[in-house]
Image 1 (cartoon, rainbow, N blue to C red):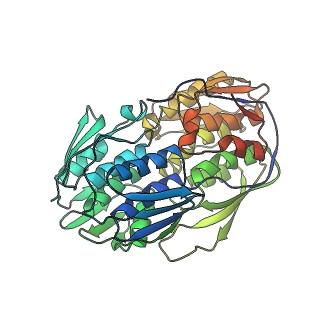
Image 2 (cartoon, one colour):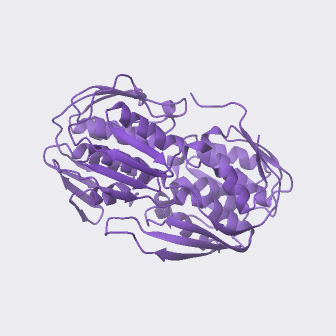
Image 3 (spheres, rainbow, N blue to C red):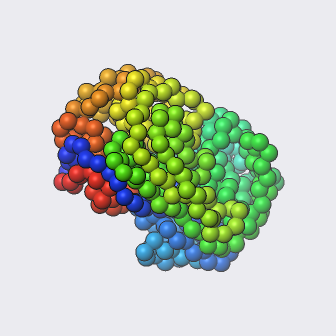
Length: 441
């Protein structure tokens, strides 16, 4: 069940930012490194691993399937792969906590196994839609049952899946990844077409584990039956965690603020383009990749205080900035003029209804806005009022409104912040080091 107890933040208004920050490792990459490492032959060494609650839930689930995992110790993890057919039947339902990515990817990983399994989660995750993943897996022959489209997800092991040609109705890295994981064990050639680019961490990492994929435009193809080989995975700092401080820097960095060793995969960094369109001064200083062509691009990101102005967000940039919209809406609330976001219906089915949660919070801070079925219209304000925000147990809502205090006239209190630990352990300390006057209550 979601923790909705007394965990709160109180942030005093104002402040300035400067200096150098390091944020935790990338959550998406950490999840995938664990899963592919488990299916590989030999050991996989992960550095920079995110020891947040979501990724720890993935580690515990894999341990429940008989995988030996050592760590995390100082962000280092070793996974002793069991190979494609080495997973063992779990003794109990696998609890994925709040990790929607992990649950959806595990559906693809577990569908071709020789045993049955059940996936559950906390109160928030048990409300999230799973049918869009179940449907293409069922087309491959998987026997998966959801409860009115939501967890628990009951999986009857089906070792003889068949490859499919599938055109994704919406761009979704989670659906794509689940199909690719199932396709590893399917007979034939799995062929996927995306309507727009989505995160390609799974494709890059499959390549690092020795899997051959082909790309042609927005189409991806992969032969089933390929063997994964243990490798080394260097996890960069999470761009989605860095995003809060990118916006904070735009609002209040009197001297340059630098975020170190951040993953800048182009399928993830739409927020940079959106902020630049608003007038932000953001500079990337690329770092050399520590290995071959399958590893993620990494850079130090330098951000300067900027006079932001409102924009109309192109729908083409929605998919590459979907997780960053909560803090983007804070940037819009502090910008001059109007900002319009449409085509972001996906935000309705995240850890919370992020459109409704952000609209309610902006209302508390005195920001003129209009909640739309698939987006938000916001008129920026010179200063925000203080107030009490319900984060709805959503880590990104909580951290976004912490940033809003930089432009507030009175303190902001944010309720129900325990789930910040799912993606950003140590957020309070990092925020204080950056210059926010934040207190955990």
